[in-house]
Amino acid sequence: PDIILISAGYDAAFGHGEALGGYSVSAGLFAWITHQCMSISNSRIVLALEGGYCPTTVADCITSCVNALLLPASQSHWMPVLNIEQPNKCVNINGAQEAWMNALYWIPKSELIRPPRPEAVVNLMTTIRHHAKTGWKCFTNVSEETVAMSFSEAIHMEHQLYEMNKCNEFNSMKSRKLSDDSIPSLSSSSSSAPNTSTSSSS
Image (cartoon, rainbow, N blue to C red; front, side, top):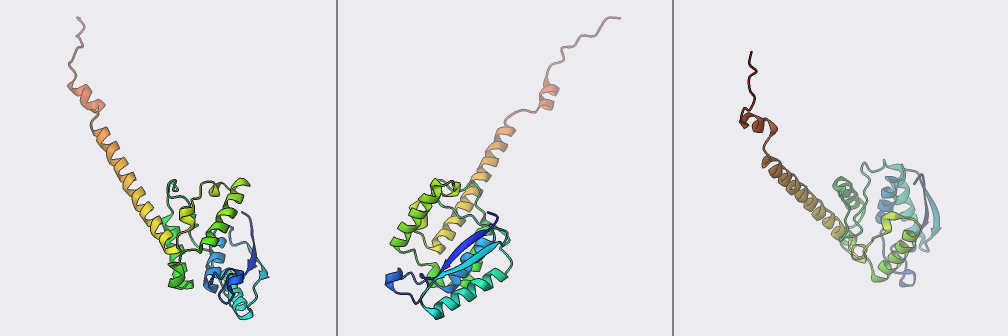
């Protein structure tokens, strides 16, 4: 996208009760999400304040997100794996590693290992299916299993897929080399062929 418009509501932040979901999202996580969005829109982001009912918490979230906007965008664009059965052909391990290091800086570890609440997974899958119907190809084959993972589980899965892809590529190259070695070269074939030419009589 040329620009990303974010309806920046903070109802899910710490300090808001169960009536608003009780998700207990940290200000650092909102900042991390903002920073990740910058890498896919060339840093063109608009945050429009929408909601939040705990003044101190909302102020912390706004400050964290503005700080994220002032930082340089991530060097690597990270497109996470959204379906274990049909992973991306090439896992961007550099992007995943950078996203993880930034997350460790901004987000408490307890939040990184916490899986999403079941109702959050339901809402996310509903939104994903809607966007898939409107032409977002990256949402076509999203599995609920990946959406329900904690952040640390998702990063661990990406590393496993990356190592598996590397192993598959190595085995493929090895099998091609063995296949090439089994075919005699043209030069060796021609040198061992019998000489059937006849000299012309003078």
